[in-house]
Image (cartoon, one colour):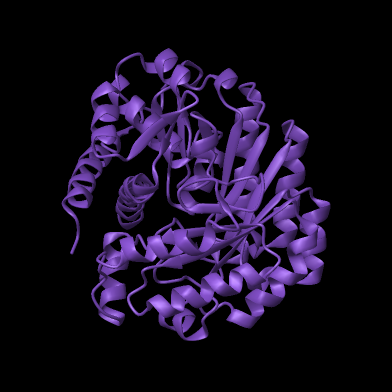
Length: 413
């Protein structure tokens, strides 16, 4: 049964998530310079919303790959980045996600080249699928200077991949891709998921044992967190999605991974010091470029249009593609900071005091009362008990974003 603590955490985060995403439409006459301070931002996220196969569980903003629309989109994305360059942004860290960024390698290479021309990029993290990691593509990604490559495996078990509609690769294709790509990147991350309806404890254990035998220096385990419509479709195809096993699955992951890996976030396990792709952990402020990308800067949450067609049209007219925004209260901003820093395994006491004074004292007191956090060497960290609950809070925050994506996609915003 779900614990009382889990129920309380879920209720609080759902309530706060709805507040955080209570967005307003942007006035096209908005003074962007008054919101977008280039001196506050180092991280840039670029979204490529196209996939050759649409996985039924995925809640990200993605569409079936159409070469002509994709070509227009990459052109528009460069134009948006040009607008940020004109506003004197100088990004140093780049994260490219999707969708499937490697869906068109020629356009992707042109995009990376343009970004590196505009900005003093020092570090690049990118997502891909196992089926895209041919020897030729690995060589190109390495030549472009990709530091961290994240491969969306989800599971090595073919029967489970079939159940979840992940038809772009098999377990063996994933294994071969990992072995092919390992030498080429500073960090090779493998994304795995848990708590699919038909997944058993034995399935998860087999994936964990296999990953430990492969040349991988980072693994990220994501709990299943579909948007409302995705959840309904999955349940129609399989069976009711339950969170009853989520805690025990996560404890199994911790037990089997921590002897040889260390935690970079509550979901991400690394061998040694590695780059992570959770830019919300690394930086309080970041810019998201592309259809459906979100930005957070100086307490203001911004969302671009989710429609690739509307996105391209806005950039053709020289307009910013952002359509929704919210100015956070000091408490909302502080709680967001707390969530992301605890998720990233460290929240410096002095930084908390400098940024927010005593704004978070009630929240931190409650977390300590439940033994979910502890302070060592002036750093607040999740306890072993707290790891699951911090991850649960982040899961429900991401679920709020999934609700926003679904709403905007359904209503062509």
